Length: 136
Image (tube, rainbow, N blue to C red; front, side, top):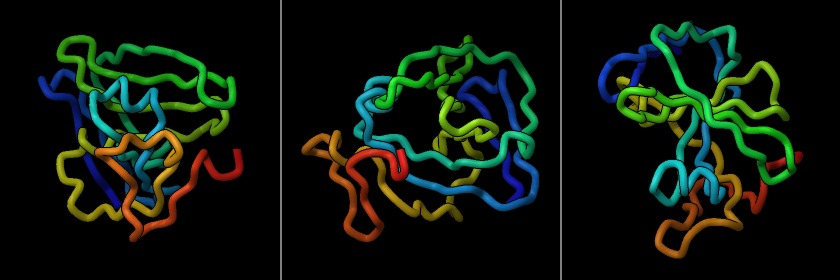
C-alpha cells in the first residue's frame, strides 16, 4: 500500500512505504471535530517507520479522552492537518486521509468515539461503531 500525500501548500510531503496498515477509521472525538472543523476525521494508522516526511511540521499537544497526550501535526504555513500521534499507541502514525494524494482505495473499518458524534454527522451502520476507542 505505497501512498503519498502532503499539505495544501505543498511545503510538507510524505511517502508511505508499501506494507500493511494497522487500521483505517473515522474518529468522531470532540478534539478531531474542533481541530478539523468537521464532524469527524478519517485516519489511516500505519507503523511510523513506514513513513518518510519532508518539510517542517508544527505540533499541537493536548490530552486525549484517557488523559494521555495526543500530538496533532500540521503544516505551519497553510495549517493543513497531516498526522496524529497518540501516547497510547507508540510507534503508530495516524495519517489524516484528507491529506493523501489518492485515498480512493481506502475503506474505513470502524468509527471510534461515536458517543461524541454530532447529530448531523452520525457513523454509518456499514462498519462497526464504538462509543470510545476500542481497548482503551
